[in-house]
Length: 246
Image (cartoon, rainbow, N blue to C red; front, side, top):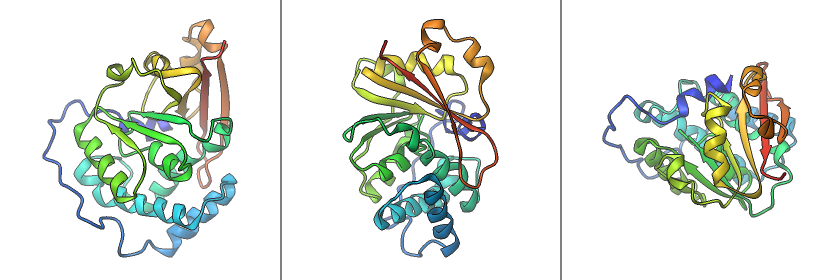
């Protein structure tokens, strides 16, 4: 599940930071994406009910190309094939949008443990009025995120820090992650980052009964669980939303 799809996105712990290879100008562009990828993206967006402009669809394909091209250098994901990246990463990330319709147009969004930019970069492309911050403790992954943000001209902020170090900034409308294995690790990090009325959102695979059972009652009563349907994916996906509102 995202427990699997997201497990390879958390901070790198064991490996020393390698020297970062900068992306050359025009990294993901030039040779256009295969028509089949563009068609699969259009089909998936239609299934999700998301109407995106041509420039946004192209930006998603450009991001996919960069993710594929630089995956081995930056160790971004265990998924290697662009077609599977489209489903397991792009459409999986975008599938949360129908559940987030109540966010304000100028929402401040934080993606914790962003890794290769998931879900933050697809969200920033699809919702350009949101101010998306991408946080990852790995300097190497943060470097990739900055390069991609510059290449795709995204108004994202990238922080190469641990969530604890920005906890004093209680400014976010949404704190989201698909990198955390356990709700009981994610929520204590997310909660101090939210402004009043904000939401913590955990992307999950199968319904995480055991994790939910360990939540404190005052937390579980603030929870709203949404089953997500990812086009082209039969595996289960769930979005767990927690509100700071009493």
